Image 1 (cartoon, rainbow, N blue to C red):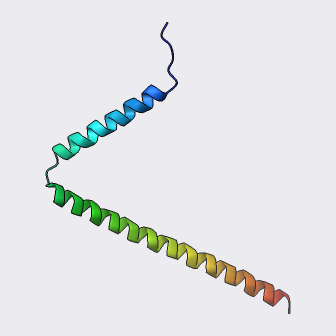
Image 2 (cartoon, rainbow, N blue to C red):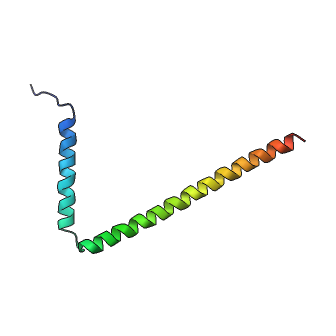
Image 3 (cartoon, one colour):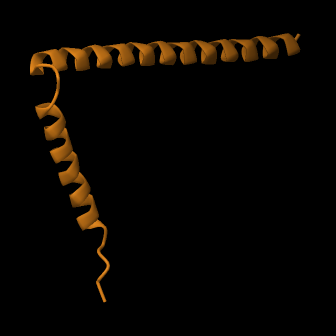
Length: 78
C-alpha cells in the first residue's frame, strides 16, 4: 500500500511546476523583456488606480452614511 503524503510534496510540486511554467512563458514571450516589464507596469498601475478609486468611493459612502445617521440622531433629539 502506498503511504499518503502530508501534502508537502504536492506543494513542492506545485511550486516547481509554477517556476517551470513561468520560465517557459518568459522564454516564449512574443515581446522583449523591457516591453514585457513596461506592459506589466502599465497593467499594475491601471489596477492600482482602479483600486484607489474604489477605496475612495467606499470611504465616501461610509462618510455619507455616518453623516446621515448623525443627522437623524440630531433630528430625533429636537
